[in-house]
Length: 159
Image (tube, rainbow, N blue to C red; front, side, top):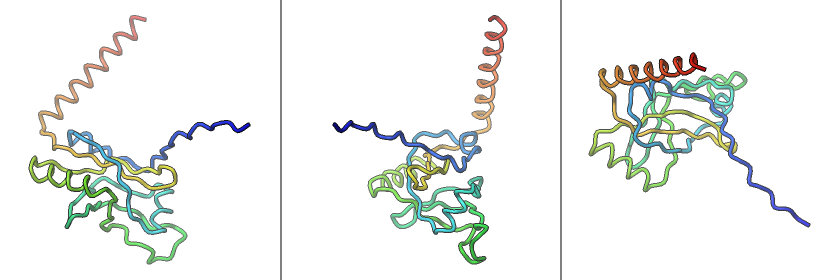
């Protein structure tokens, strides 16, 4: 008698996260995209050798690219295996790309990479559609976080 197996839950192996993105931008929408990489880049990513700090997403002639991300060369590959900083194509459906391009052009939004991870053996990039925060917005966020921490401290003392 054959038993039905439950589908395995997708495990995400986080490689890198862009911590400054949520601090500097108000994220409105998030999307998952595939990324075109060379073999040595994938091996380097598995070791966690990537920096998303100054990277952004750019639309060029109906395609979408990750610009400014630094993937260090893989240790055990030849010296000329891949360029550390280059434009890497992101894989999205055409409808998603046109939707993003319209929002970026009309509303003045920006597309930012939030994190890179492996899902089912494939490298994925989570991108966010965001609006830049002003200085006073950042200050309000800090005040609200401090208020929540203070409330938690008081609640902890009362127990």
